[in-house]
Image 1: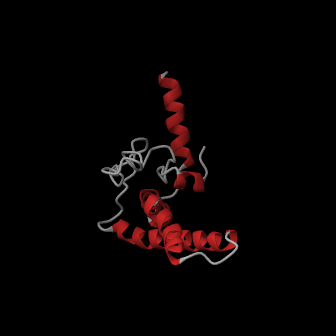
Image 2: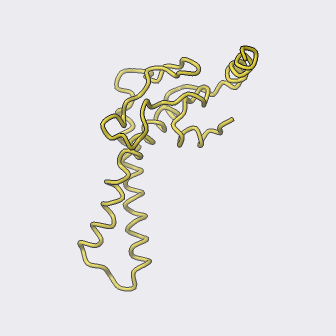
Image 3: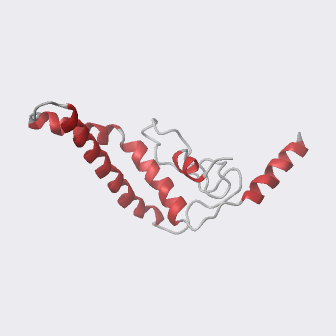
Length: 136
């Protein structure tokens, strides 16, 4: 059984925590935002309302700000003297660019889990698992 935060980071359905939210893996850049319309395990709708995931932009922004601040702080702590401007910019911007697909997908998963109005249904998951065992 996946716990709440593990389901968010693994991008699983908030209702059953079994089905995937995204169709493709994050490293497939041409498809990294393609989502299923419904959960393949429990049938939960992943689009609560039109334009729902616009709010994920703000979550992604906050995550990117935290990433820039932490990389800048690490650079300042780990270097004995103040680095040049190009080193500061490269060190703080590179992680944001490289982690962009991961952060964007994580923000969508967080948006669905936090604000989607979908509660975890342990009984549904147990019933599905029992049905699968009977069908074997």
